[in-house]
Length: 338
Ligand SMILES: *[C@@H]1O[C@H](CO)[C@@H](O)[C@H](O)[C@H]1NC(C)=O
Ligand SMILES: *[C@@H]1O[C@H](CO)[C@@H](O)[C@H](O)[C@H]1NC(C)=O
Image (tube, rainbow, N blue to C red):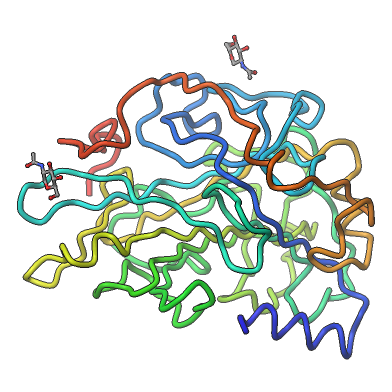
């Protein structure tokens, strides 16, 4: 049983008044676009896996929740976009790169195409903290981590897990695993959950937020006066199926995996969030007491099945090869020096 299952079982027994969302989103697109950090750039500097609503584009302004007509996520009113860098395998002798496939997580409905698991928790899996959780507003966006974060691993909540199987959750590592992982590699991205209450964005896409997040879904500390508004604690899990590369692990023992901006350590691991829930749907969910799948089927959120999720896509606007063995990373990782 995975830790979240254990906790939710415990919750079901002792404290039924929690509201937390955990849901799957299949892959919407894998291409070089980044409407937050490089709006308008076509292409952006490095490859992303994007999940969520089909209003995704090189530039995104206004109320995305009113523009989307389909989403790859379970909750059909969630037109938000969620994205991270993509993982590649670098062949140890011939030096070419192969994109690592993404697999669906455990505890999600079967058949989800790649994608991520998305969490909106109130405080943790153990407590809603009794705080009012305020939904993000239309136009809101944020990032966590930074590709230029070259030299250290101080980012709380940005982690790698060497999977024995899809339910492995610990230990959480600050860098790529240093050995082949039997069940693949999971990347985890926890966002800050304290908002300044005013700005939908900030020049570095981070200063309007403040993190009191601790590791591994444990309760976050109180929000400071500068960022007093508690918003949902957003987190992503992505499962990378690295197993086909385990027999090509380098002889010198070095990690052969690299993020799409050229980072073979993992210090620069980062994620982007662009709010796009329709109307007051996210606020209604946060005010509700539902937990995970119990929030589906109109209680209180509208939801959809896997076939509808997998069907939603956006056009590939960059049109470059990403699936073959590539002589260089798409965009050549030239945006950051590592
Ligand atoms: C993306 O932006 C382009 C250029 O502004 C526009 O033509 C296109 O319709 C947009 N696509 C979506 C899905 O919004
Ligand atoms: C590098 O190795 C992979 C895996 O064996 C192979 O598929 C690919 O064609 C090789 N590329 C070059 C340029 O040799």
